[in-house]
Structures are given as structure tokens and as C-alpha cells.
Image (cartoon, rainbow over all chains, first blue to last red; front, side, top):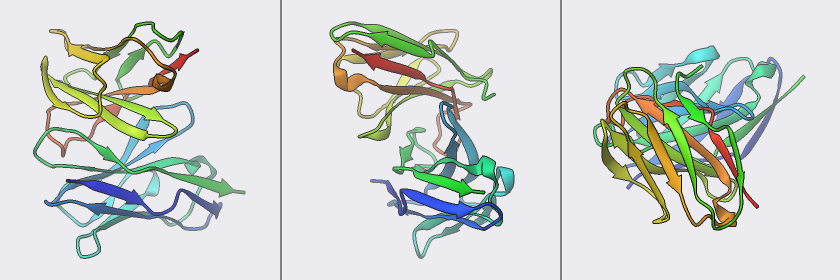
Length: 114
Length: 114
């Protein structure tokens, strides 16, 4: 069975400061992991994905995430937050080979203060 | 623009009614997924189709059904609607059916049951 836990339901940062959104996963196999972002009244947009290649994954808009198997974590970071980063972020796990069923975390709302 | 089109954007109906949500996947994508997003349950996988055939089922109620047509568009049918079915319904698509494939999401259909 797979599951994913996002450790913070709400994160608030000031513009220009670093962002850290935390995610832990549970899986009986080496999973595929994704981060998606959802802006208000919009669908989900893929930020980045991990599929057993490099453990440090670079995504769009300056985001990156590091896969740490020993810690079962896949935290999302960005060196400097921008106002446009304010949104809801979802950490997602999937079996890499079977069906494409995605298991979503509960989401983290990122607030960026001017 | 993800390339995934969902119609209608909004749907308001009454309890006991039946509705159909439509999804056109990205050009070339063979796999279609349906997800439900609600405040209490978060984002949940409902069902997946690949090239016209059902591939995986999640927490989909018996009152709900879906299909994928030869032109690859998909429809999600919701019947005997209840207040608790009010939610945002997303469709996503990917080229193949594997879990390591990023999924591209439509903007969703917001269903309100009065």
C-alpha cells in the first residue's frame, strides 16, 4: 500500500525568502513521486517528478525536490519565494509501472507575504 | 494550457438527478483518469481508462460510472445525486497507463447539488 503525508497544512513565507514544503511517503516499492501545484479555480499543474533517476529533481519556476529513501521524504524547496507562488501544493505518489492511479497528500497552502 | 478540456465548467442540479461530465484528453494521450476533490476527502482517484478499457478503480461509488469512447474522450456519469456529491471533478490524461507518466489535468467541473 502507498500513502503520502504532507507535514504542514499551511506555510507562510515572506517574498524573497526560501520555501520548504515537507512530504513523507510510505511505499512497499520504489515509487514515482510528483509535486503538483493548484492555483485558485484552476487544475493541477505538474511542478516536477521523481522516477528513480537523480535524487535531486529540478522542476519549473525554480522549484526542486530531493528524494531521500532513508528518510522516506520528498521535500519541495525554492530559494526565493515570489508572490505568484501562492497556491496549494500536492505531494503525490504512484506505482512506477502499474496503473497510473495517483495517491495525493492533503495539500499545503503556501502564503507569500509582501 | 494543459491540453485537457473539461465541460461543463460549472453544473448546478438537484438531489436525485443525473449528470454527465465530459473530458477530452491531450492529443495523443491514451489514458484518462477521473478524480474528485472535496473539502473533507481531499483529492481522490475515481477511475482510469486506457484506450477504451477500464484499467483501475478507486473510491468510485456504484452510482457513478464512466467510459472512454473510440475517439478517446471520456464521460463520467453521476446518478441519484446526493448533497455529498458536491465537489470539483477533475479529468487528467497521460500518454500511457504507467504510474511514472506525469498526468495533465483539466480545469475541472464544479458540481453543486442543491
